[in-house]
Image 1 (cartoon, rainbow, N blue to C red):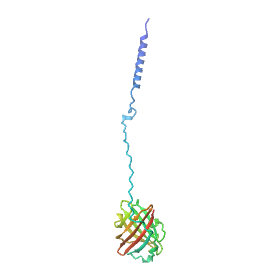
Image 2: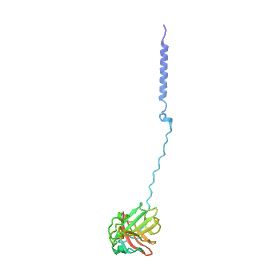
Image 3: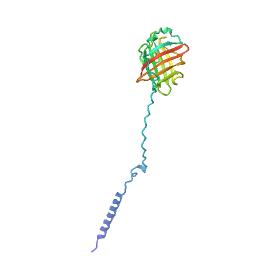
Image 4: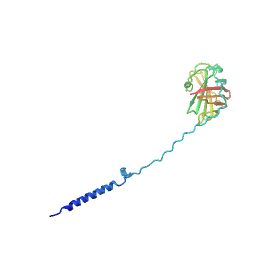
Length: 218
């Protein structure tokens, strides 16, 4: 009788070999690049360093206490403004201030009427009646915010410089009269919370503005 055991044994051997191959594959560690197209390496970004906050610039100490009130004690213009008057400068006790350009400019307005600050700062003056006026004092501090200190007439927008002009009722739409100041000083005495206060005496040949101010800053 012919024996047929060998082919079966051979087949069982093949299965055993195949099973051994699969077991061997399962024993290999996973390749982290195998499923990535082209096997590109992983770029790990280093942890970013936290941005340190910019330290606040300390406000200078006050030069002196704030004045008791806003007042114009003297005012004269080298340009004739008599047709817009007469003026009672003792009535000019209303002060408002407007910070502009991130605080690098502050305009202080002193008037005898309660004009909206946006109108006093516009290209058209709100002054319409004779005897009314607005004294505008513009403070600049270059690339830094206006702060406590002394401001002198100088080049437009230079650090610690000042310009001054009047708004009066002349002509059909009112007029802006530059005082042409080239001497004197405006002293910002203090910057209490939300306010600015100081004293001024600025002049040129034939022009003079002297007084004090205490104003809320908008």
